[in-house]
Image (cartoon, rainbow, N blue to C red):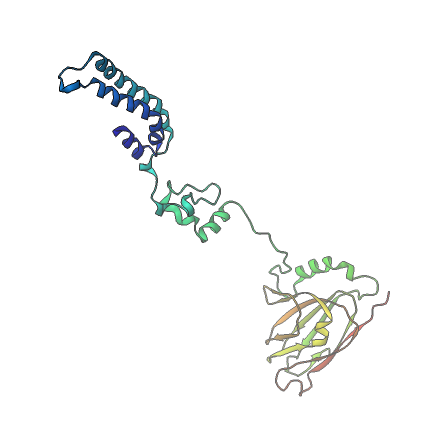
Length: 282
């Protein structure tokens, strides 16, 4: 019984599970010891008692030998980490492949928590897919980007379209005149267009043609040097003094659209114009 208690505490229940096999032997040893005791308070055991006692010790030794492999295989409770060092449900919290076990690396457990998971994924060679970008860090007029975009939109060029898709519009002039140059912009429906806007004046201006903006397909707007990319509908484009941008688009609807600068006093001062999109003839 003492051996069974010791085994239950130190072998993770291996000997505890083996006590069922040892119980008959333990009972035999107990009976043998009782048979070995003298009856009626005598001082000398009988011959049968001495024989049974001599068999009890070898039987216990045999049980220990049979239980020894279980002792060596079973995990010892003396080395099982306390609940505070285990993951959810007492399982090892190594969610990332190749990460060390909690018991072996409790000091580095934080690597697997929250941001540590992202760090582990980054070191595993996983790279986020690279999105296509038009900007190449090239300055205005973005010649490298223009070449890439024109090649991509080649189906929107050719017969019925202008030979040169580039159209430059100046917002104001060096003498701070309130005007668009030119004030009539001619485009063709369904044809790829590179609309270059510049502000050479010392005043702030903007390019506002909401109906036109809603009727075009905007590929990208490049602004600044190196350029920032703006995608989506451009209802109002504001240019500070000396600024410039490239608006790469395809007009989808023919029509004549109003253009104006909405900076206070500029529309009243005559800074208005028209954007005419002619139907494409093939």
